[in-house]
Image (cartoon, rainbow, N blue to C red; front, side, top):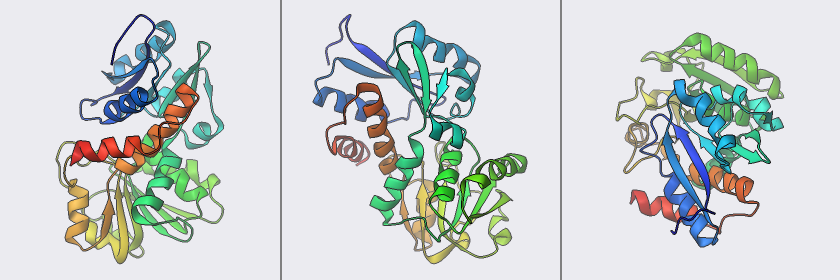
Length: 285
């Protein structure tokens, strides 16, 4: 990749960010498309997020992705929100449109695509247990509500945050029932029944930590587990799912799907078909 004075930049803002495979897959798609641009990760703390977002405008970046823990905080830092991002209450993508920063959310559709491709699942009628109440969890909760899930339990270590998310997304579903739960070792005992699908939208696994609850006790035998976390080898949540005999998939499929959507937003054209999936699976194999 040759960098010149004409090379455009897309950023990735997160804390942590060193583990991310987004730069590898995005730069592979950029090279294959012969676009004079580069995708660069930046370690941005919460205290520095305002300055980082402002730098998109000041430095003329094409835009940026946002990852943990910035997806909610960045809502108030952009000039405009797409309707879906406003409904969800978080953004993972910023697009610089003539020096006006537009906040978008590609996580919801990325999750739906990954559930279908990796687990063969559609949401209508399912009982879903969602772990977390941050930005990624907001997209997952909106997907479940709008996708026709029967019941969605939102479990978070800070119970009040789970309650707030239930209140925010309840208006999006037509007939979907919601419940707020505490995420701890007693979680399985609080469920009215075992669920069909467990979605991990927390950072469990990023630091190698073990789940604080028995995965196998939460999901029925024919159910499945989707972990938004990914890495070389199975994540702790995936390992727990396999130990319980459950089908499971990590976040690589979702990462590729939302990455393709972001690519189209920044560059106005689709990424070469399949290249992001191939790069990700090569990176972790």
